[in-house]
Each structure stands twice: as structure tokens, then as C-alpha cells.
Image 1: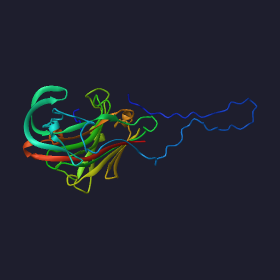
Image 2: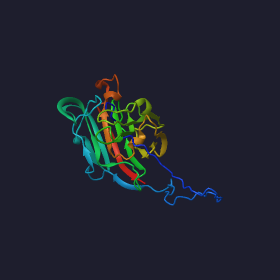
Image 3: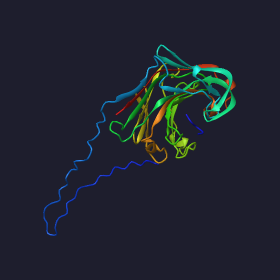
Image 4: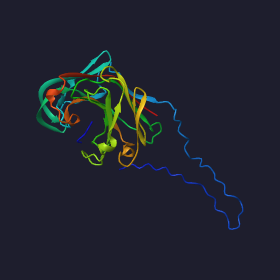
Length: 291
């Protein structure tokens, strides 16, 4: 979701056993298995559900933004735009002129042309070398907002950005309802990403209108890969390499984010006058698993 904005290299060392024998020894050298070697990981082992929100009571598991954001966006986030009804979270986007804090790090007043909502989980998640922590799975069932200028997203990041990384599971444009993108950010200094969109942005074409109904979006995060799924279908695998810094994300913890931005750099050369006046992003549930 950020556009303006340690390498943890994982080495597995296997030390063989060898026998030293006398000068005239004739006994053959026999390799003895190391009894401390870990058992192979079962790829079909079950996932454990560790966190979820079905949006049937309140938003106590989330922090709600009340400020502007970044990326030259034109919306002001406020809790009033977050509605709960019948187990559905609705992020209500409206054209409305309002003055508020420029962004969470800058309280200076700024005029905005839209109001919208953004929530971030109070709990952070991410895989590590701990037992049962090797893989994480983020899932959400979402109906995306329709309309030019709408920029919905389901993503995760850690503070200070981008030193803990960012994973954009889905970013969509409301006027292109059969396409969305995923992306990765990472940097060693706050506010300075060292990833390059040319190496990380992946566009996904789908055969349905994602603004017309609910669909499931999913990330599986491991030490050396990120997998993006849509309605249980694998769309893309990011394999770790020196330019996407996926290996550096392993061991980090990130919070889950749901929001709808409006305009900004995601809609270059576009005037807010051409944007939809209203839109709704609806979320049925969010779940986190690990194994």
C-alpha cells in the first residue's frame, strides 16, 4: 500500500561424520546418520487457526485510523466510516470535504475531498524458526468497492516502515474490476524502501468482477516464498531472491490492514472530479493460521 514510502540469510549447515583411522587401517569408512537431524517437514500437516474476526460484535481487535495518509491520496480516514451489520464490516467511502491531520506523523491541517476507513490489527504476525511458526497464512473474504479512484487493499506491514517489510496481498482499482496486483516492500532504514516495483509488482487477471461479490484473498508466507491465492487458486509465487528481500522478511512481525484509499499515485494523471462519489468495501471475515 505504501508507494512513497539485517538481511537475515538462512543457512542450513550439515556437518558430516567422519572417522579417523590409523595409517595401516583397512576398515571402511561408514557414514553414521546424525541423530540430531530434524525430521522432514510434512507438507500436508494441518494449519492451526490462531486469530480471526467475523465482524459480528465490535472492532476491539483493531486500531482505527483518524488522519490522512500518504501517496498523495485524497481521503481522510475516520472511525465513523467503519460500519458493522449482520457480520459484515463495511468501509463506507463518501465524497466529502473535510480538514484534518495530514498523516499520522504530521498533525498539520490539510483539506481532503473524501472520507473513508482504515483498520490495523492490534496483533502482529509472521513466520520464524520456532516450532509451529514456520509458515503463516493470512486470509480474508472481501467484496471490493466499485468506481474510478477507489483503491482498496488487504495487506500487512510492520513499524517502522519498511524495516519490518510490507506485503500487499491485494491492491485493486475500482474501475478495473477484473484485475488486482500484489507487491512487496522492504528497507533497512525507516521511510526508505530498497525494493523496486519493477521486480515486485505482479498484476493478476481474474475471470470475475471482484466488485460484484465476495471473494477470498490469501497469502502463505514462508522463509523463502510468498504465495498469493484467489478463491483457493494459486495465482503467483514470489521466490526469494536478492532483489525482493523476501528472506529479510522472515522473522519479522506485521499487522494486518484493511482500507480503501482514494486517488493518489495509484491513479496517475487523474482528477478527483472523475472519481466515484461513493463506494463500499465489505469484509466478511479475516483469519490467520500458522503451522
